[in-house]
Image (cartoon, rainbow, N blue to C red):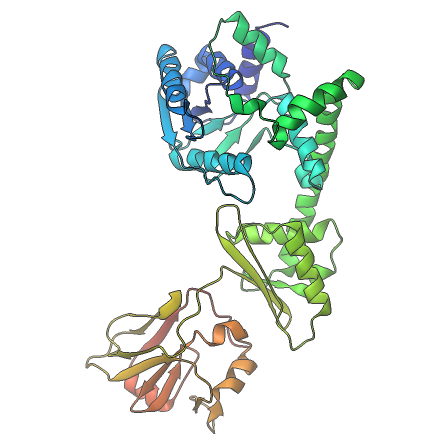
Length: 444
């Protein structure tokens, strides 16, 4: 194996990369060391401000010594190195391996230098493992395309320039350069799925199919093309189905999409809203509930993301609403308010204010809906039940109990910034502004 193949490959790949400083994710192992050392030999890489970042997971007794070793290697290459220590939750439902990966990526996102491109040493053998693991987990084209050579990572870019090279190329380079690397004993622990595949399964498969890595990489490229086409089709479908409120989706149109487009369109929609992606089981639950629920029911599906964030989807009338769940406010909450300051509502319910504030302090009481409220809105000939007004306005049921209701002198004056009485209009002398944590749809 030609040891010069690695720097030659990197030099060619670097010439096609967008401008930006390079920061190598350096674990201390053979792969990342070979990548860092080869890049350090290229003037074009150094001219970009080459640096490295090491994440200490604290999962091994020698992890602190490993960090010192990485520091010494970086110093020998005259490269800056940032060491980030993280706490990996050992009781994660996704397993220790997945929890460590998530903690590492989060550390990269938070500690990369501004505008830096994160460079990782994943190679063709890693790609084979990734595709097979995705296949065993029932992934579709989006997962079976494997790792991408270039993708966003928060506000940064993640670059994997070695996906076309076998690990043997990196090993030949490291041996030719007499490099010293760390052997993490956890890499031999076959209780981890990737290690089991690497140690027990793939060597056997390669004895029967020696071109396994090449053929799987070829399949991954086909899946990449299929996934890219599906992404384009899903973006078109989303543009047609998303409501005026971006957090809403036409559910009948969504159910009418093909099996390949339906989950992808949903995930793209939720990703754009900053909500965690659902698993297959949650999408299946949503489909079943939407198809089976009567018109007067409001189905709801909720889940947690790998970072601990939560999301839920609720149906009301023709739309599915996506939102981050909020704690239920106390039903008997009540607060005196003079109309001058900004009133913070309970349970993360938002704020209430008057613009401009009144010249004289008002004697107001703000509470949440308790049932049976009535008022006569400006422009209405008779008083109306608040329940009827909310239904006619299309306010989803889960938002109705969060609307601030303003009283003065024992009389209901206003409901958020949706309705107010003639007396309220004269008394306030300004505009009542309700800024909810969860947006309230405009009235029909």
